[in-house]
Amino acid sequence: MGTKVALTRDMVAYELYLYDKIKGYELIGILPERRKDPKRITKESVLKWGRTVLGDSGDNKNIIFKQMVIDDITHQVFDVNTYSNY
Image 1 (cartoon, rainbow, N blue to C red):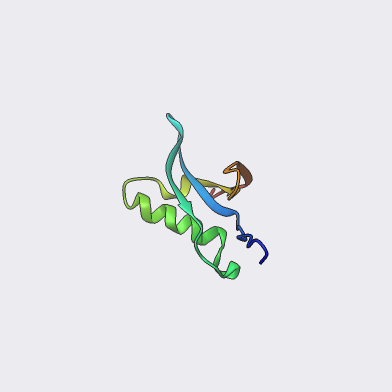
Image 2: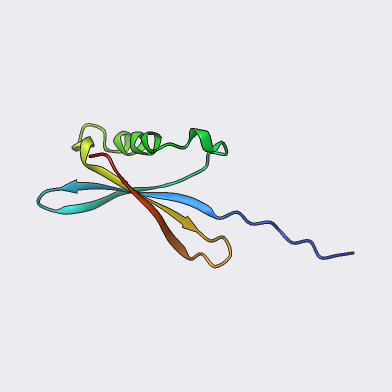
């Protein structure tokens, strides 16, 4: 009768920002990554989500995002990469 240990998986999420020449970077949303197949996770697929959130209300070419990893146990956030659309 051993103790069962739950396996944890760090959560990946993306912070999306829109760059405005006057206001600077504005957070437009946080996208938690739920796809299981890593081949489907591309820079373009994340930016597409950002463009969908903005709709026609913003300049879709000035979107950047930061990939983050959130530790399941400590909930500490680690910045992994920053990508831009310009």
